[in-house]
Image 1: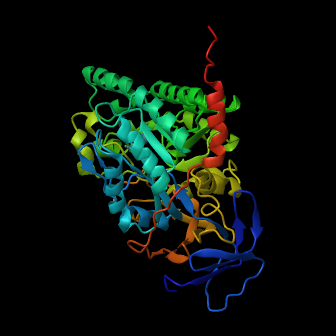
Image 2 (image 1 turned 60 degrees about the vertical axis):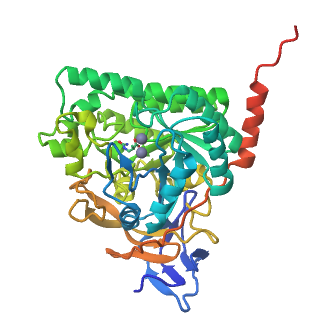
Length: 483
Ligand code: URQ
Ligand code: ZN
Ligand code: ZN
C-alpha cells in the first residue's frame, strides 16, 4: 500500500466525532474528507479495511516543544522526528511554541521557528510566548495575529532570570490579546517562590532530583493559576492554563468557570498517569528523566484531573513533549535545578488517554475525541477544519483498533529521546492507520512520515466572539464621577 494517493476510502468502520459515533465509510480526496456515508465509491481509491475499528479525527497536541533551546541545551527531537513520532501515535497536528529570548523581537523569533519547522512531517502551528514587554512587542503581537495566523500568546510565570514574565507584562499582554482577539495562555507557577524554594531545598543539602518537587509544591502552581485567572477576570479576557497538574489549580479553574468566567485548562497525559514517586528512584538517570515542570504529583491529584476532564472544567490533553537525553539531564547531577526540564509523550498520548480514560469508563469515545482533538481545535479556532471527521475537513484521521494492544517502551518509540515515562505500560486501544491530509503516513506499524510534508496552520483571531467581551470590558471601566 503506497503512502500517498489522492483518494483513500476507509471502509467498514465506526466514525467517532466529539458529538456522536456512527457507522460510516469515509472517502478522502486531495487531502480533504469528501464523503462520510454508509457506503462510498472506492473507484480508483486505496482502501483501508476498518472493520471493527473506529475512525476518529487525528489527535491535536496543543503543547509540544520540538527543537527547543532551553537551559543551555536543545531538545533531542526536532520538528521532523517529533512530528513523525506524533503520527505514529495517531496525532496529526501539534501546536508548538515560539519562545523569544528576553529583548528578542517576537517577529525575529517567529521567523526562526518557522524555519526550523519546515522539516515537519505533520501539520503544525505556534503559540508565541511574550517573555518581555515594550511597544515593539505590542506591535509584533498585532502583526502575528493579523498577518501570520497566530491567535494565542503564551506567558511563562516561572523560570525567573530566563523567560519568566512579571505582572506588568501579563497585564499588558492580556489586554493586547483581548484587543486582537487572541487567547492568552499561561505556564502557571510562581517563579519567585520556585527560585526561593530551590535555594532553600539546596541549602538543606537536598541536591538530587528528589529536590525538584520539593521546590515546586502544588501551592506554587495554584497561586499563579489563581493570579492569572484574576487578571484575566478583571480584563475580561479568556485564558487557557497549560499543564494543570494538581487538584488546587483544577479547583481554581472550576470555581472561575462556575462564576461564568471563560477559563480553559489543559492536562498532560503524564500528569494523569505518572506520580511523584519517580523522583525517589535510586537511579539518578531515571529520576532526572522525569524532571519537568510542574512536577509529577502525589497520585491523589490524578483523580482530580480526570474529574476535571469528565466535568468539562478541563478541556484538552497534551504532552509538553520536550525530550532531553541522559547526558543532557546529567547537567544537573550535582544540582537538581540545573536538570533540563522536560519529558516526552507525543507518540503515547492518545493510547494512554484511551487506556486510562475510555477503558476505565471515565470517558466515552466521543469524549476521548473531544479531549484529544476537537476541543483544542475549537479553543484555537481551527474547528471543524481540524478535530472533526466531516466533508470539507482536513483528512487528518486515525483508524483506531480498540482491541489492539501494545507495550510502550523506549525500545520501540519513534522519538529520539532515550527515555519513556510510560515505559512498560501495556495499553489496549492503539492506532492502526494514520492519515495526514489524506496521505497514509502510518499503516500497521509501518511509519511513512515524509520530512517537510507538514504544513503551517494559520489560526484566525476570535473576532466576533471576542467583540462582546471587549464591549463588556469597556462597560466595566469605571465611569468618570461628575465633580
Ligand atoms: O515549561 C515548559 O512547558 C517547557 C519549558 C517544557 N519543560 C517542562 O518542564 N514543562
Ligand atoms: Zn510549561
Ligand atoms: Zn511546555
